[in-house]
Length: 288
Length: 310
Image (cartoon, rainbow over all chains, first blue to last red):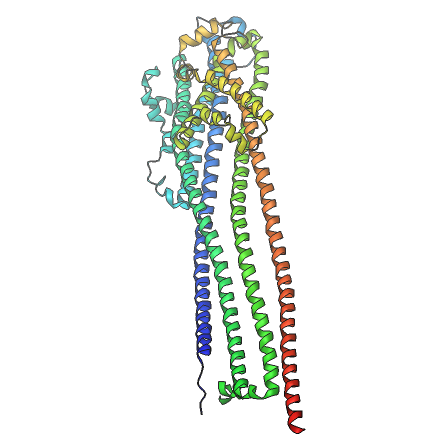
């Protein structure tokens, strides 16, 4: 004859089933949270790398700007010195006989001074050329690794081209020059033939060099605008990183709670199972 | 498969010898599972506290990292300014020597040296302001002003005496900068980038007036610029000190929180051990009661049987 199961046993069995199910649910939640954590961690690491790259770009822009200021100041200090000496030797109004006595005999002082003026001009062109190269290299690299700055440089119209747009610099300041012919000066520079130059042309050459330097300063505003974009992006990323960090912390806390809850449910289910056994055994004994 | 059937198990336990053994084992199992459940509850509670601490720890670590980055940037800026100031001072000494000769006076003057320095510094200041206004909505002077605020200084744990010193330094710097900002950059732009023959002739003919050693507006503007550098070094050093304070105090907080986490973990271990001992004692007492109740039952049964025999 089959024994009938009592109500208490049924309740205990239902409780065991409930806690076993709960344990399963909590296990599933742990797995889900683990997935969520992994995704959030990947996002966080990506943002961290992007922030580091942007910070590096911003530091490079700052260093670049500091170099520009230092180099320009040093160059600008010497802009008139050779021209003044040349005038002291050659200008009829201020020609000073004693001035030549300051220099070593047998040396072509005029030629030396002309060479110095030419070097000053060449230095200015070189500075702007290097500035373009440095800046374009910097931005071309960063637009490759930072998706936010796609087409930042590669559309071919980037302002760094303006560093070496010497014709534009010359033509925008025509009133400054005595000989208003850009090609005249550039050809002289290319062929290194300055024999036809008169005092007014030497002035033009110095002014041309000065204006190339001024152009470098003018472009600084655009570089600063780019740096502002970078800085704003960094703050955006920092906000996002903080949000993700809070999420990670929450998810991680929940994961721990779910693990503990799952363990707790298993233990309770085991405890009830043992109570059920005990109850069944005592039932058998009482029947005997 | 039949052996696995529940009824077989029940039959196995129905044997009195097996029954007692099984009851003892089940009791032991119940004791262990209650212990495990209480351990889980303790861990749950302590884990919650550790989580909160870890959350705070992440914030402090982030803040410390930010402070370290700011110190690094400030340090770089500061070094650039110091290097530049030293460079100007060294160069100025050599140029003053050159200016004291007739050759030097005619070749090199205030327009050549002071003017580019003033222009570049003024330009750099304008660009920096442009950047901070556009990115933070505040000018550099406004940023300096914020460091005079007591609540900000309290945030950096500055003592009252120190607060006054900082405010004084910032006030001096602000005054110098305001004077410096009055310099018209356009005037210098004109002087530097556009050279004409008449101006140069005038500079050579009036070389004494243009000498680096002579007093005048340009020299005055140059020394305003030079003072700005000095005051900036002072203020930036002070701000860097505040950042270092913040970095240090964050480090101390981190240590404190980490110690708390270690303490909580130790506490968890001890509580679990205590719970085990406590529950084990209760279990032993209950078992003793059960054994004695079984013995009394047996004595009663023996007495009953003896009466029947007699």
